[in-house]
Length: 133
Image (cartoon, rainbow, N blue to C red; front, side):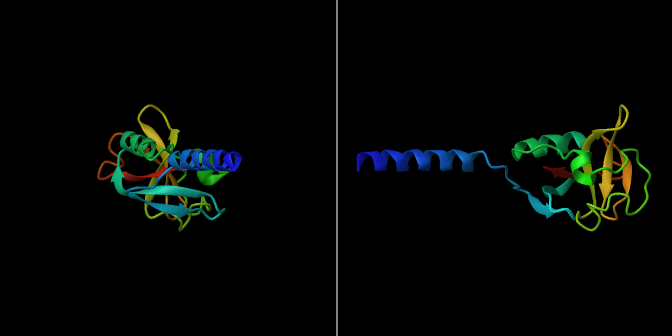
């Protein structure tokens, strides 16, 4: 009986530990891409640096472009449907972790278009949502 109790305590400890490290999506919305990959999209717009930090606070990382869009070329073209994996899956434009020059990072919009976004100020008028993996 003692062995069973010790065994159950170990199982409970491992399960509790696994639950504690599970990434969250507090202040965000779970998103499922068209290939079934799940992400956490922030509910608030932010610049790239804030998006990076926000994802870390969720126990996640800012999404890699290759996980967002697969084998799509990484140079922005701005063509709707360029990233079909996120087309109609995200709510606006989302940051990727992929830097594009000193001041820019790749963003993907809900129409599937890929663009450059200024990491400090978004597109000059507003900023974009974080997308965390």
